[in-house]
Length: 227
Ligand code: MN
Image (tube, rainbow, N blue to C red):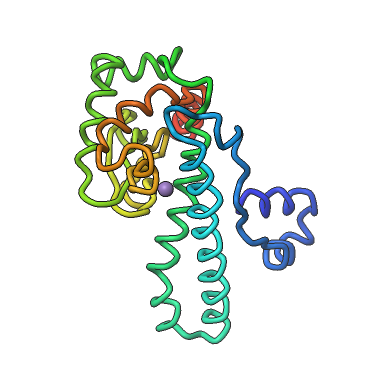
């Protein structure tokens, strides 16, 4: 949504910038999956993908839009109590929208294998080897208590790759300062229908559908923003 507003502002030119930024603000929408629901099977079943995208992600989008509408109302009234009481709904549903929008792109039916180029070099430098990174990220992600996400992120403060975990739908960037490159959703809705209680099997399997091209692109963007 932010980029859509930004693009419009560029198109409309300087005189209309302020008015456009205020009035053209669109609601968040569910992004299309870049593949069919069944395309990631047998690693993630079509049933899980459809529920996860069409129900879970859609609900985060709907609730984020509802919270933003209430926030706008509270701002118009100058009701600071109401604004503050909306913070957790915005964090939870906004985080859910951000995280899942990255997650769908991080996966691909043609995924798996290993990254090449700059990302491969950085992984080797920061973790010793690709296998060590996978092992470390898997262990941290499996160990999350309750619902949350495991992440490979880029820390532009010391220009290194870092593994982190976030609880619930807390989004990586505002929570830790890391740029999100690769996320693994370990909410039970992401695997339970297929893997039941065996989270380690799901985390082990998901490496077969990681879209390293997408992760590499996020890495390139992250390092170029730090320059
Ligand atoms: Mn999820």
